[in-house]
Length: 316
Image 1 (tube, rainbow, N blue to C red):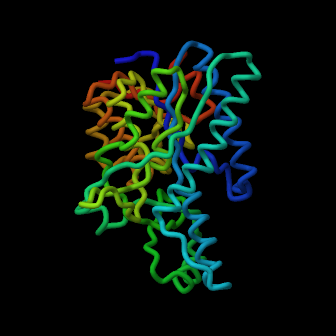
Image 2: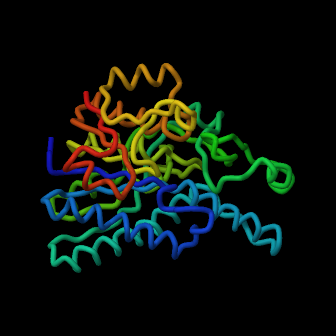
Image 3: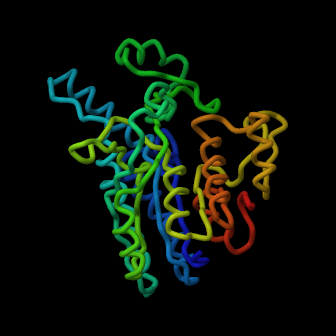
């Protein structure tokens, strides 16, 4: 166990501040803000692994692709390639922003991005029951137009924030590039990896083959964090703390909970599927497999969460 190795999973939605701030330039601004808090940890002697969500970004690229096909006849981009595209584009912004931040502080260290494949089971039930939200939120008034224009889409309500498209989300089994990541860590690099949960691939007689899906990035992060011996997993999201009865008049923030308490809250259905639930499940997976602590909080509270207890802390 490496107590100074921290795995930080940045939510895709936390990089999109609002409906008015969702361009590539807006995302870069959000990332620059986030890495300042990551750099605060590096200054204190931590080495970081960073993963990122890609739900909104995947949705944007797929919609562009579908519009281009309808208007110009251009070919569609397969979902698996879209995941790879987001790994490159978001990873580029994170590594450049963090390296600039470290250089500006005269702090040693360099961040690199690894395009990462993650093996899934071809028979995973996630392929039959799409559940991973991607893309933007739609109001109820928009549903008729969306269903007319995109009849193949599966849409669900997402935590009371509107309707979103859902796609298959199989469980991560193996990180293909793990030896490369270990080598980079041993050489002192900070690493961006399993972006968007990793590029989903299956093993065939001919080798690896990409499949159309989006792996939950928090599950992939907890898997890799355990394998690499990280002591702390930080799941960065759009809220400061996890809450019971989220969005209701009796909403209650949680500062600390144990694995047993978290399992009780899950049984009581306090956490929304496709939103907070997979984050809690990922935290439990990490803790049950040797992790010491999980913190769930918004990017701007990362430093204070580690140093003075902000956010939600989940412990064995």
